[in-house]
Image (tube, rainbow, N blue to C red; front, side):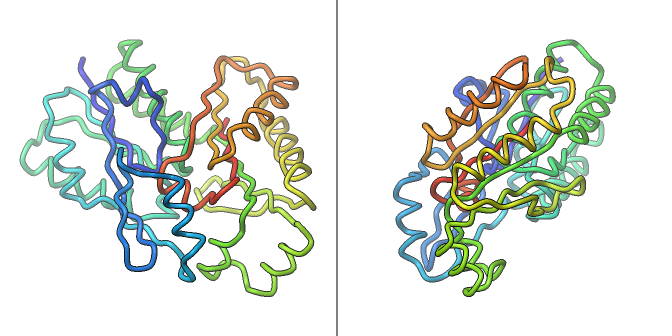
Amino acid sequence: MSFKIILDSCGEMTPEMKSDDRFEAAALTLTVGTEDIVDDETFDQASFLRKVAACQESPKSACPSPERYMRGFEGEADHLYAVTLSAELSGSYNSAMLGKNLALEKHQNKKIHVFNSKSASIGETLIALKIQECEAAGMEFDIIVDTVEKYIESQHTFFVLENLETLRKNGRLSKVKAFVASALKIKPVMGSTPEGTICQLDQARGINKALVKMVDYVVEKAGDSKDKVLAISHCNCRERAELVKEALLERIHVKDVVLLDTAGVSSMYANDGGVIIVL
């Protein structure tokens, strides 16, 4: 059976996914000041980070329209999927669901499913790869949906931020707290809840100590990891991400590792120097 997977652009794509017609990106739009930036193949991370740093306002994002998802669902594939960033963080999931309903009004027999990743960034990437794995195994559509939904429930997302300016600008961190954190070089260790919201797990003085704590949390949640894929994305800090990868591989065994640069939406939230891990 043929299939197609639409990722909203918060999910990074591997080079193989980008060259495969069965994968498609639905771009979010990023706004920095008065400028709109489309999060597609034209996205320039270095330029974007400079603009965010220079702007006093918090950057914002707008999800793809239902019509955009509807167009994606109008292909000839037998099985159609969308993977969106957490419904607790964005309207992308609801937009995709509306797009699915619009597509089904025209084509009632289409098999379409929208996955709420309850994560973001590289977490969406892993979900798309899981769908591809299930399709390659020849599973029926309903079995794939059930298998991938269970996979989503088993995922754990963690991240460490070097730069807290976006949190300060969007009001999630007061000026006083941001100043104190900056002065003391305190870095938060963050994670996802089962519902797909963000929580602070810990903090440390200095980025290296925060990364060590994040590695400890990943190892704690890894369980029997030999058949799992470890995914790491980073915002403009590949060497740091490589060190995190090596630290993890010294302590856990995994089936494979995916390491990617953050795309636009993930770069907006992770900011310069951020590292995201999903297992």
